[in-house]
Image (cartoon, rainbow, N blue to C red; front, side, top):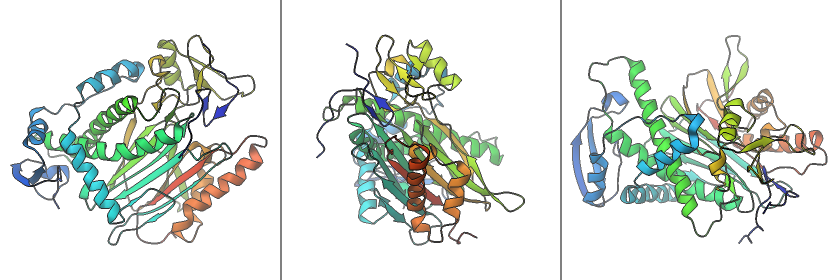
Length: 426
């Protein structure tokens, strides 16, 4: 039976009634057994080739070392079928995951993780993160965010992410993905890194950089497939007509790895040759009308079109029903449409951070619907107090929304401003 379409909730039209809200270079696992393994990973950017692996159970280590490392590639024209294949290959390492979750709890106790509006600045770190989220006029705030300094006990690593839920259970889905994704990524990265080997004949720095990128890409692909599969199995969260976007960044030294699912956006502020601060968009807004996305959806028998009362807003629909009307082409959850072209495969990219690169803004579509990339970096760079940059950007977007979209309820609006250097903005 066709679902009603008289309700719009953060990019999703229709759905069931909403619920009531109520030290080591490679720290793999935590536990009592310590083994030392020799790997040639110094050229991957680590200070030592001697890796100490702590394991809760011997089975964790056995599973870690038994599978050869391969680089998975996904044809996005067949994202649905390829992701199912990836899911099948991903055997979850419970011990490694528990260890990663234990690291997260320890990081939270040490004030290294922020999951609410505020700021993070760890002594000795060049990173400074400002986070702010504001509920819109559509009900409960379905946006959420996370910043994790010293990600995986690595002094030079940081993880941050922003998640935009949609649908009746969207706020639960977004928080669940925020909870599970960092630990799953950390576990997969550790496993992939331990299994990786470099070409001994390769001395080029570009080759090493390329290898590190593929380790992170492989880890992200495994993670997103696993997280989406786990979400589908959740009994306490109904994700059939609900889902979330996910935009995350890992900073490792002078490199950042960006993974995007959905229509949130990351924009870098960098200094041009003439000294001006200019924006560089690091991600693609995965909307259903993008040619590559639309082609995949149509091949999977889904439909893409705008409603008469929403010109220019393309949505994904089931073959024979005016449901669910999803305003993005990639998301976690939304299993009602997963067989018809929606995928949760991330686009993963990397960028080398130089002294010219000042900060990156991660924000949900509530910002980018009414604020340009140039406006966003101008607002952030002109705010004297870094801790207040995300709040100022969000408040600017709220006012812009009221001016540019009169009569339309303000969306939930959230942003993370991640500064790369400890020196103040000029």
